Length: 106
Image 1 (tube, rainbow, N blue to C red):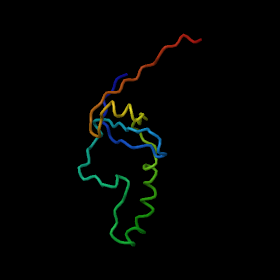
Image 2 (image 1 turned 135 degrees about the horizontal axis):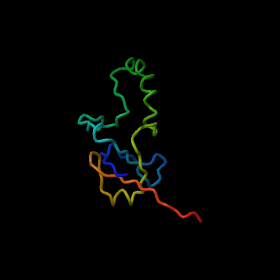
Image 3 (image 1 turned 180 degrees about the horizontal axis):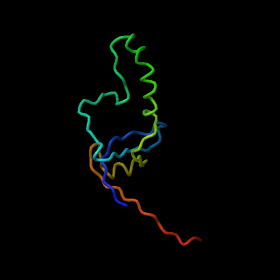
Image 4 (image 1 turned 180 degrees about the vertical axis):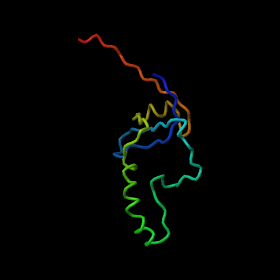
């Protein structure tokens, strides 16, 4: 099976290990956000402490996405070497191919 995707996000491993997680989005669903929050998509902005308290439950419910929450988009873990060799960045179109390897059963 071969399928085309768009690189949606690239994140370093949370535990400091030398890996990168790349999220791939369906090209039909991908919308590049030109006004992206510099602190990341899951960081909310607020203008007053009242604003913060009012939106706190909403912000807390959105935190699952910050820690690898469930998603329909494929995520692949690459070593730093593999990532550098690929030379991909957010917004690049890529093709992923999945093949089943037939084994003779030892």
